[in-house]
Image (cartoon, rainbow, N blue to C red; front, side, top):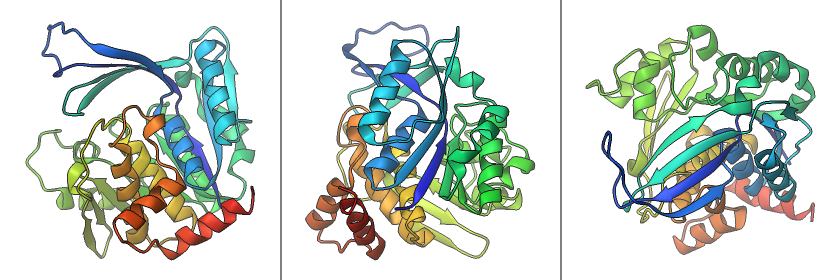
Length: 324
């Protein structure tokens, strides 16, 4: 079974539903308040584990009840938590999530202990990267920590994936460490030095990111699927028609699917097709962790759609079953 190392954040998600997202200065009544596991790094680690990979997670949490919740989750999901560090006098990260009736969301985050995941911490966790096929990170942690993860992954010969969220400008020295960059359209524009609402096509933006040193760009397009842009080709992978209930976990499920397929040796086009399925399945349920699909749920989707599962997917199933 291939190994994936995820370096990223954990944040407890505090969620409620509203009829519509509020305007500036407006107060709305919400319903369905709940406390969930969250953080893009944590979500993606769980997503990878459910899809059949062996996962090590490098993260920083507080010594509080929310941190204990996180550890319980990782034990239940079979994630290696030896590299999840506890910090004193700093709370576990927290995110506030509002979801409207159409399934759209807005999110704010207090990073808490995530801010103490430093480059030195990542280097001290070097054993987490041993024999990793894929190293994946995001930007809910200090940029220096994400850079360290990408650098170690590159040195170890792993495929490096950067999900640049929440987006911020990055120097070429970091982008040059990225094998696969997975922005949405807005994030891609910001990384390319454009305004978020700039009138520029996704393919052109992707080529500018390639010029900055990224090897391959996989741009998520929401209900339109994803766009793969390399130095020699551009391929649109359409999404399946799925009714959205809650889009909160779609990006994390997409990145998990991409990482797992890549770790099992799938070509990039096939890996993105798989990621489109996992991301699509995630919008059919509320919450993030509850919506992250398992290997068996993906198989059921293939059967329902009368699609032959990819060759590597059968290998993933047999390897996982051999461990039980």
